[in-house]
Length: 328
Image (tube, rainbow, N blue to C red; front, side):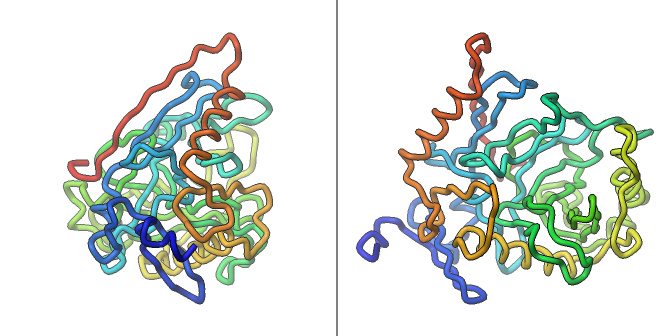
């Protein structure tokens, strides 16, 4: 392993007693500006959109398949607390899409229940999701670990993000966001954190620094967010959702602590220091993880997924898109 380190061009991070290695393209270290090194990702759709077999895979700038859950760095800039967000569901759309945490390389897939695609109802007066909805990579809400502030365990997913900027983003985009606050949804006894964030490239991003700025510059948005999460399952015959802290939105500082905690849970998961259950931890860039695989193995996994998810009568539909941080 030591002999391979110069070839892997690895940036090392030692935090809380854990050693995590992230391989960066071109030999750029985290201190040289991680967001520049990781400034572009590609997505590749396989299968028919709006079908159970559809998958949206991710590639890095070199064109190699990666996991959006494990291989995209959590932080863009550790000093300014800028984070990467993976967009799963664009604003105003209804289809429930999610990072497939239990599948190899964790593509985005449709949420399915009882063999049917899931769609959220329109909560008057809104159409679909009222923000660009997604997740922070390299975070995990451990279902076996009780959160001290909510007294409930995690929901077994990456931490969710509601991006409140003015643009309607696209599924699979990886954007840089500023964290503003967090809401603690309690979903069937599990803690399901909902971060409030804004893209750093939004025209009004400079106005937003904490949760109170949302109240000031987007009056009614937080109230609408709370109401949406409270009611969105009711049309399906389920009860209203509950919240910790009586539905109070917590500050940026509180949110950053939540992110830190879920990142530590993810590191334990990737280093096999906890029980991850059915979570698939296959990755290509966390070099010292026991779940690390080669680029060739990653491609093979994607090809295997294609052969399983596409039925003989289902026409293959492959589409590749490139997302840039700059200009978005």
